[in-house]
Length: 259
Image (cartoon, helix red, strand yellow):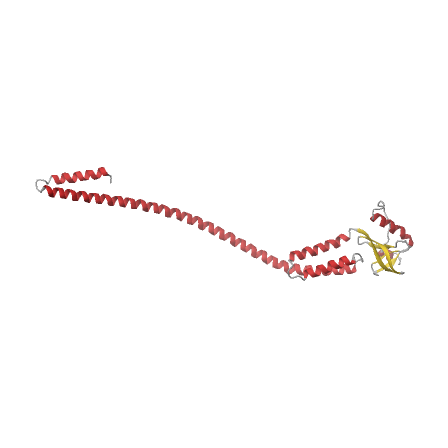
């Protein structure tokens, strides 16, 4: 209620009391007027307090509504977060199961592969013996190392397999001492991939090859001296490449030849 309304009500009260002036004492009328005015002012004060309280309640309700919407939003985001974490945990569990299964299959495979390498090198032509044996020993030590990651074990085994495979695509000439018929002799050894292994003495008096089946160094006819020497020169890039004919133990055996 505004001040104008209050004044109007007070005037009505005074007018009503004035109508009774003839029947009442002036002091009584004044006292009644003051009392009525005070009552009206008190009522107006209560109305204003109620209005303020109402507005405060409205504001609080709006705040509560805003907070409720925020809580709903946070709850939704939290559920999304929980769902994401649960999916991540489930994926990690699947990966762990797969790794466990892989380990069960891979570790025996690595052991089998290294065992195969041992057998292959033992039955292969005798070249780079020390280097290859050291590589095998390194693999054996790696596979029995409990602190070495499975991935590193796999890498080392695959690397060794690759090195052995590359020997089949390379040629080389080395100097070695071989146990030949006339005793230990220093010769040049020619390796042609894994096809053949030949030797030639510096003086050219001794020429031969490695017999795979007999697993011995066998002499060749003197006719092959020049051929082996030319092969050495080509590998060492001392002459241009050309076609040559070298015997193979299996072919010689099939033709009835011998060492």
